[in-house]
Length: 430
Image (cartoon, rainbow, N blue to C red; front, side, top):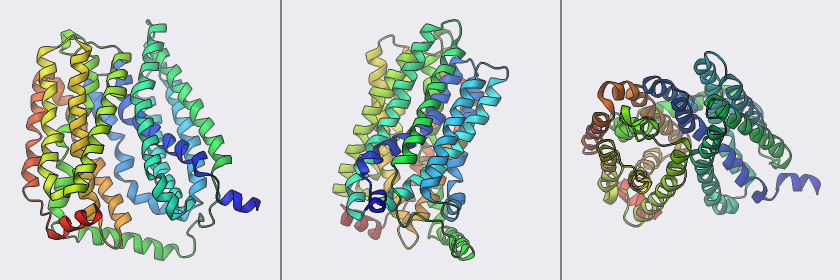
């Protein structure tokens, strides 16, 4: 009886906390680090270049996913990675006040990124092992909700908290951010201890050690089959170009809001940026995504593709207005950010559906993982040079450039062949 209880613990005790813990390190690495470095007076060029490199673990994640299967259990990897993430957060906290903090804190952030990507692999695998088929269907919305709550917490509450500490230590911004990261480190140690005791022990959660050679052979075969897909060049180009404008905007949006008026920014406080992106922005993003999913399910991807392409790209123009008008009103700024985030949430639906459709087949899970690697690469490469472009052009011309950079997405979409099979698949699924 005790063994059975360990195998089938109440999912409400671990699903919410597991996916909250999955979302926090991602948003810290991708978003909060940008705001932190801006407040610590790192240049936009360096922020965009080096924080974009942090996408790399998610780009290459499909390459080491078999290692998580072969060595140890998913449960073991989850607990270990939460410990490592906690150590990485503590490392950032300790290096922020030091000399050469930028270099050393980046090392710990990269450790966090690698650990977070590994945690994603283990958690998603454990979700399928630790739940019955019915529970998997029931809790899919719960896991998404708590991942979204993690986004709100990271982009909103954590940034607001850092802003509060900045007000307490106005002469020492580094101390404010060091305290914030130390609190996060403590949170992840709590997560690690909690999940060590509360996660179930599924019977099927065992290392795949029976035939490693066959496993790796099958793994490489899935890559070969992916790159043998019809029109693979167009597929990859679409995955890389669909968010070409957004991938540059996302790295400079927060620095623009934080920068002084003299340098073309809006001169908002850290807390104000946390409120705009972490509450208003996330709510608009979520609503856009929900609406996109509802309409796509009703009419299919082929019907909505161009509308979603327009939605993810044209609202970027609100930043051109903000850069030229430099409004003082928090309502106006929040409204503009909400418009852009809603468009992104709505337009990203098409991207996700396309990834699902091209992954369909015998190796759909592995092929979808490969598409997520290209998705991350499409954010990483343009993001690396976005800071340099902004410093060359200034904010006003940079945001005009972002809009111009959306043109390749419209061109490549003309060559996307969502044939009758793709259309019918979507309609059947809806």
